[in-house]
Length: 166
Image (cartoon, rainbow, N blue to C red; front, side, top):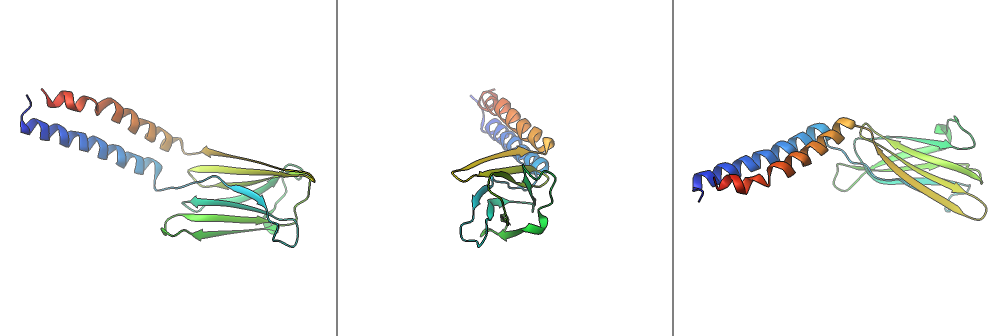
């Protein structure tokens, strides 16, 4: 049977392992947030307009619009992007509006910071609207850190009860 001292010792070691993993996550990943954008036709506007919204981003990202037909075009003069602080005062809602869009074209709203890149695509035709979104993690150090934390936790924590009995 393990003594009270041994149980306390291995319990403290377990807590240290968990805290070290959490600190590694914060250092590797930083405090960050990212979400998938949703692109819709804005029917309230006076002209053909697209609205791209993503509920949570931190740090503040950049937003770029692209078009399949007008490749390489700069849409910064026909778009307007705003960042609204969310109720928790940490993350922000991203809202970007693209004006003067044409039918039978695919547009992409790309939101990116140092951690992630999210893209929302929309194709508007006379008869239908097709949407697609995808998210890509950009910071490989953060991804490695997350993987390492879970690998260490899963490897060491099951040993704790065994070590307490020694």
